[in-house]
Length: 124
Image (tube, rainbow, N blue to C red; front, side):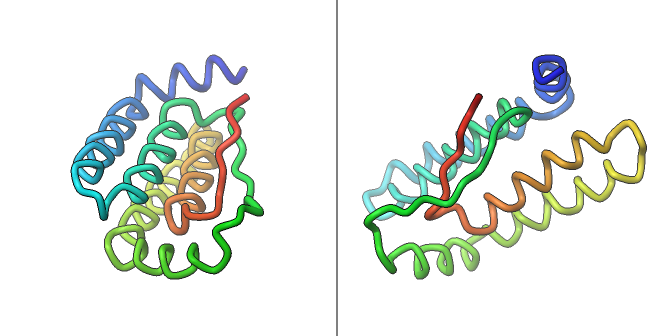
């Protein structure tokens, strides 16, 4: 079922969303300052490619308290808009009965796109 869901996801917009995140990641990687953001947008892009069966978990990494200011900067610089987009699409898909599994994936991506620093995507 995950493979069918992921293929349908790619055909009906997941590929375009992933390309958008990868393009943003490439643009951010051109600068030294934008490199941490580039890694996060790439991580969200990977989740956009194969969301069914993927899980998001909090990491207990050694960054300490640096992820809090980075997440605040992320929210200010566009993370809020990405979160809002995924919430809107999730709600619109939940209105239709057949779109509920796809809406759940948008809510999963909304959780990651609001504060990606300190989270890890596990693809199964």
